[in-house]
Amino acid sequence: MSSELVRFSVAMPEELLMSFDAFVARRGLAKNRSEVVRDLVRDALIQDDAGLPGTEVMGTLTIVFNHHASDVQEKLHTIQHAHYGMIVSTTHVHLDEDNCLEVIILCGETTDVHDIADHILGTKGVKNGGLVITTTGQML
Ligand code: NI
Image (cartoon, rainbow, N blue to C red; front, side, top):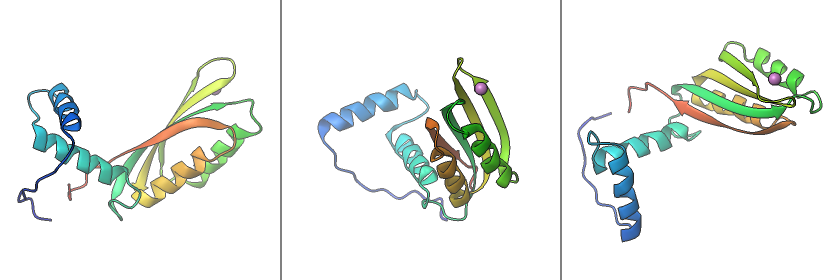
């Protein structure tokens, strides 16, 4: 992929642009509008299941669940053992008497990481959570 920069123009409502400029300012002096747009586009492509097919990524999946709910812990354990080659680390925090937080770090092809995350997030008893993807991908 060429690293040559290509200019294009974007139209947006003035209020949205003002909010964006404030967002750019919060990123600090090292970033201008163009650099922040590039960061946002990269992040959108990285987070998208189909954005960068075949790319090796790292995923950080955070979930919260009630450990009393059905056999959720056993199910989560089984899923992670079924994919042990892609599970780098799991951290478990006991939030209170009932609820647990787990941060599961995954490594693998982007579609596989999304599939495992969706399986875990879709497990009965998991209350909420989310996947954040990152990569050192050369194409970006
Ligand atoms: Ni716990």
